[in-house]
Length: 321
Picture 1 (tube, rainbow, N blue to C red):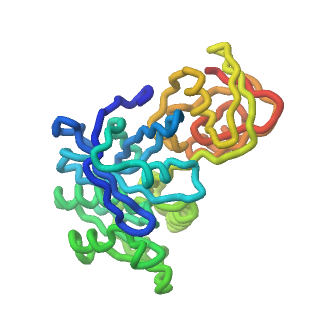
Picture 2 (tube, rainbow, N blue to C red):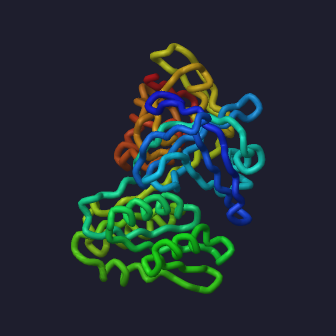
């Protein structure tokens, strides 16, 4: 891996089709040794060597933090995405050697909380599988509310119910089951922390509803890795390195910088961690900010960009790289 995360040589020990959209992947060390410890909410970056192109995608760890003999992730297939999920679904097989990163946690539990209230949507269930295992092992107080499209796509709902019983609540779209979020938030004891992971719209809804109900910002935690969006190719000058690069239609600015032989830091590659934040020296055009790190004021200033997910349209862009 690149700066900020060490490489781990791993072997794929199992690939399991969970449902029509999701597959689960198990990784172990080739010698069967223990992998680095992690806490619930952590992710790893998986390196995919795809016909001369290297893809680096983050995935939440869903295995138990109490047992690090293997790492487990789940990948939802996206037929119109950038190709990472299709690579995992079609090209990765048991016995295959791959490279993964050390775990990084940008969505950790606040263990000072008296209670942990978790809200998941779709594949956003995966970090909560690990977090609930951690809390159950420590005797923690938690409940999980999980929205999904149908029973067939209720990924790991049965597993979670079997493990944690009435702490798990599932809402299925095809049964017209809806989470009454204002009522749920109003009924929580003092000292509760709120966690949400899922589609961007769900995260916005939960955060806005919690803010309107008076929840302090420091008690509301969320995770959403934004995938780099395609766009018009654009040219960039890297002032410190003294080189020019071209960012392709289906390539992120970060990937283009890496392809030029540079080694910018990152932890998430999804616009969340802030590690790849880059100063803008000059620009003539429009920024397309897609990150969750910079403030709205910083977006408007045009002085910074997150190259992992954001783009540019215009005549010239000079970065401090």
